[in-house]
Length: 107
Length: 407
Image (cartoon, rainbow over all chains, first blue to last red; front, side, top):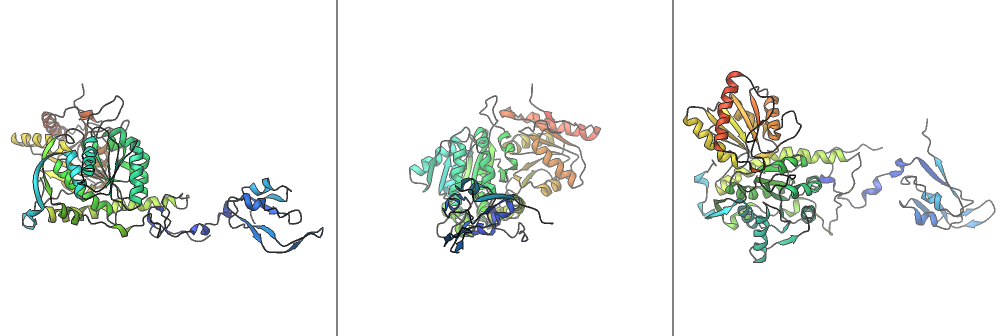
């Protein structure tokens, strides 16, 4: 984590003077569980993308061929820099292709 | 009482001497500094300020937006919004109204908004009281505002003008309360010298571009959540600004003296040079009853003096210590109570700490009086001087507050 600024180095009153600076706040550190997408089970329905409040579901132009041979032009991935691990995507997924996996502290 | 530098004063700045209650003096000053927004809700004894301001706005003497809100919570909230957008804002309240504003008081100082508010002090319910004391003000002591306590209508008029300069100074950017006695001052007519409007406006220039404002051209976010990583730092900025405001307060007071011929300082002393027994107090009691008692005591050979606290926050510890260092005994007369405290006078505690921190050890007594306008007779203050003399000679310093005027 980057060094936090002192009281002398930040705008007064907690004002945010730089628009869109919330991207600097990597909220992924809040997560206790991470969603993991099973790319073979995923039907690319976009419901996770629609429901994610962050939003931290990435829709990528990345072709994927499932084990059963089905071809997709799109791939959905999680942006773990910002995903807070709320689990809404896993709850909403109609084909149960997203699993919540406990975050493990690295040794 | 006030230092007047005659030679530097341009007499032409005084356009007249008029009879004004302190409330009307406040309204006059607010008109003279040309505020943009007044948001207020009526409450005794403050009401006549905003009645007068509403009149000024209605008859075109003051070009301002007058917002008649539905509560004091809304009054200060509207003031916060207007100030955040860059308006020069005034509001006023007392007692229950100030309590209803309480959470917004912290928001105004936390967001560093230079709002000026008049607070004629009043007792708090229950039992219901509309009469004056300073319990309401003491309850908002820790909200991070600069707090003045005026003792005359003239001083209240002058202090409102100074307050806008202090609040809007880029080195301060904090809200300011100008308090004074409810009724005893708010509704008492006194002679007040009012100044040329142009001179007052020159003294209080608009400083729109010295702070970030709610402006669609240059967007900022105000009032966002601060996580534990940031709250402490942002709060400390405001604490430090209040501490540092003292320099600006003194600077503005001297400049005011040069321009208008009056200065008050953070504390005001009466007959302190050789005083053995000093009464420390605030508001109208200091310049009237206590002073009269000191004169009488002096007439009978007791070296009596009065120290008036004008600047309550930031607390002028050094000035107090300097003035009290040579006294034999000191009493702090509070018109408010801190129930259950080791000693129950709220300002007493500040004075006591200031003296002890400076290594000054002398008999100091807490006195409570004037609660809900219980009459503080001159003879009460007079008796206090003799009590101080006894305390100094016997060394028996009361360890609890003395409740004067209580049946």
